[in-house]
Image 1 (cartoon, rainbow, N blue to C red):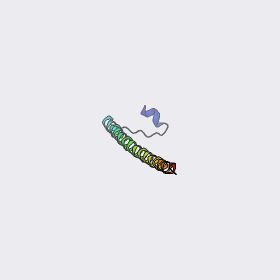
Image 2: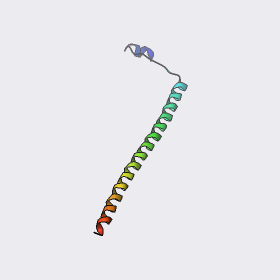
Image 3: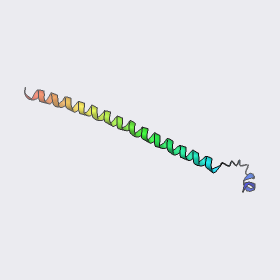
Image 4: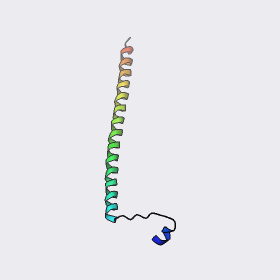
Length: 70
């Protein structure tokens, strides 16, 4: 195989299977951590949006009730 590929001026690099497996495992751990951080960030953003919406609706209701008796 190497002899056939050398006619195309190809650089062949071989890696140890254990090294590749370790890199894949590390990539999976990083992926899990990034997914966790993203979920936490999105949860915080949704929570903040919800709090803003509740505050706005609460203010609207207070104004509505205060104007009701007038």
